[in-house]
Every structure is written in C-alpha cells, then in structure tokens.
Length: 343
Image (tube, helix red, strand yellow):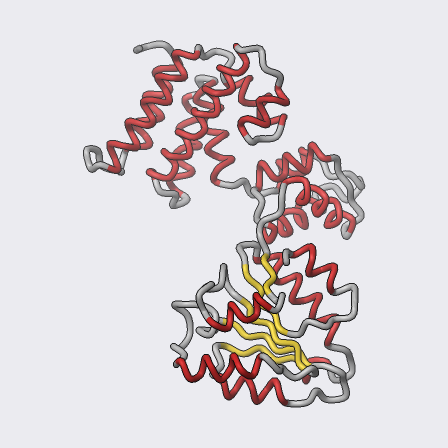
C-alpha cells in the first residue's frame, strides 16, 4: 500500500498489526508513525506501551511483542536499523534467528502492533520482508506528485491561518524543492514574514526561504543569459564557497541550457506554453522564465553553449581537465558567447 492507503487505514479499525515502513519520503514516514502512535497509545499510561528498538535480536523482539500492554488494548513496537529486513545496518542475523522470527510473525500477538522502520527501502530478498509484504503490511512512502504537494501545502498553511494560490505553491516548490521536511520548515518561516496578511505571497517566499542548489543554478543561467557578468560570477562563487562540487554544478548548468534550447526550439515551432511545460516537465511559469532567458539567443547559440557544457563535463570526467576551475571556465565562456565576442 502507499501512504494514502495507510492514512485511510488508520481511519478504520486497525486489524493489520505488522508493517514495514519504507521509501524515500521521510516526512510522510514520520507523520504516519506519529499518526499510528496517536491511534494506539492513549493516556494515562501512554509511553509505557510504546517501545523503539535498535536492531534487536529475535528473542528480544519476540519477548517484547508477547508482553501485555498496561491498562490498554495494544502496545506499539518500532524496530529501526534492523538486519532482519535491511542489508548493511545493525548486526548480522543467522538463518536460525530469521527462521525463529518468521515463524513467530505468523502468529504475532494481537495485543502488539509491530513496525519495521526503514531508512530508504527494505531488502526485498529477505524472508521476513517477503512475509510481511505477502500479508499486506508493506507501506511505501514515495515522494508525492506536484498536485498532491500543492494540496499538502494548502493544508500546512491552514495551521498558520494562511492560504495561497496554486501558482505561488508551484513557485515555492520550484524555489525550495519537493522534500517535505524542508518544505515544512520553509513554510513555517514564510508564514511569519507578514503576520498582517492571511495570504502567502511570492514576496514572502523570496524574502525568507532558502533556495535549493538547483534553483541557484537556474538563477546563475539567467544572469549569464542577461549578460550580467558581475551577478553571474557572484552567484557562481557563492555556490562554490558553500561547498558545492564544481562537476555537479557543471552538470546542472548543462541541464539548464538543455531546457533553454528545447524551449527555444519549441517556441520557434509555435508550440503553446502548456505543451512546453508538459514536454519539459516544469510548471508553466518556469516555461515563461525559460523563454524570457532565451530571448536574445538564437537556436544556434544555444546549441553551441549546450555542446560546450557537454564537452566541459566530459573533459573533467575523462581526466583531460581538472575539476578545479572547470565551472569558472565554462561560465566565463558562456558570458563571452552571450556577448558575441567569439563564435
């Protein structure tokens, strides 16, 4: 099941009592665990019936699962960093331990709810993983779609008495990325910029939100395209001073110029912005920014710029050029190309 299915399950009587929480979206995973805890663990004895174990062996885990909850119907047991379900973490488990726990899970005490909490994904070939999946206990927390994230942003803003439109929510995603933990923190900051208004604006986001590396590279490409040499160099140096790898930045800059080239080609083919957004996989307002960025470029110029960036990245990866100075060289050559000083 996915995260939506699991949150729906929590609204009903909880019959399933053994789960694997896995996937890349940690914020959703933590939210699901908190919601599960709130459903099961009730005052006044609350945390007495809640246990978090780090890589327990089979006997320790079985013993705790068999312990009756105190003055409650169920206890909640969370297992982290377990070699029963993941490689490379915790202590190795013997085949005998695997078999012992596997047999026990077939008749797990109805008074216990057991959650194996994974960082990332579980190892699919583990016997216990297969067993829990077969019984419907696998919950996969993947990143949400943009549409789902926009709805989630609206719900989060309600906590602060705020609202916003879908375009501003898209802008926030473009600026800050789609990691929900990061977004939650950035929303909390942005909601306090202007407490006199109940509307979150792009200005609020620009004033306080931390921009992702990808957005800062987008900003760099805009400054290069505008011929703003001083601003471009300042942005480039800021990225380097923040410890970003030059080769990675070069790759991101290459991707940016590829999008600019495709946007220019599609524009000259008289394609609509909505079609371009679908092809490029970006929001419509990003298409508008790309088109504005490419106004003073020809398709030929953009092809030259894109090829130069591909060649630069290849030269570094093949050892023909040192990584040190590679980004600086590429940016300066892009500025020269923009100013039509060389072909």
